[in-house]
Image (cartoon, rainbow, N blue to C red; front, side, top):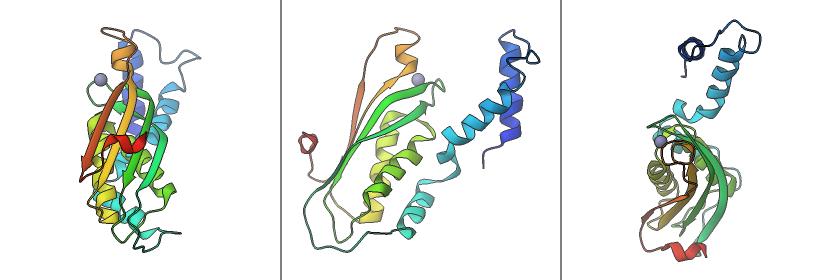
Amino acid sequence: MIDKERLERAFKEIIIALGDDPNREGLVDTPRRAAEMYLEQFEGMNYSNDELIDLFNKTFERDYVTDSKNVVIMKDIDIFSHCEHHLALMYDMTVDIAYIPNGKVIGLSKLARIADMVSKRLQLQERIGSDILYIVKEITKSDDVIVRITGCHSCVTARGIKKRSQTTTISKIGNLTKEIFD
Ligand SMILES: [Zn+2]
């Protein structure tokens, strides 16, 4: 589990390293607040992909077994994440997921929760996609899954080349193509 006290100490060190006074009024509670924010924003660090599979496999509410081969599409799930190279926020991110059921359907709210938990880790955009793909594939046993992610990386937009840009990544197995989202 995430070590909150250690985070607080580390945030205090960052303030000192920046040359500010961690005891001044505006900053005195900042290490605690920042640590609490990290507990929430990195909640997914507490679970492996296989643990998330267990979690969302067991807690089905309205999921059912189906013969349907209709494609299930969920679009515009918004998430945020942090890039593992800079600890920089990745924002304005959306996830689109589509799969062809193979006997089992997963609740749409579960898809959103999976995307949320996977993104709340130190991540790469490509790995958010491949983690979601793996979890959805394992839970649904589908042979056809595609995950498209679009997002802005503050390590690109707010430092270095400082260009507003969006990055799109696609992870897939099977025959679905990105046109399914159009
Ligand atoms: Zn980065």
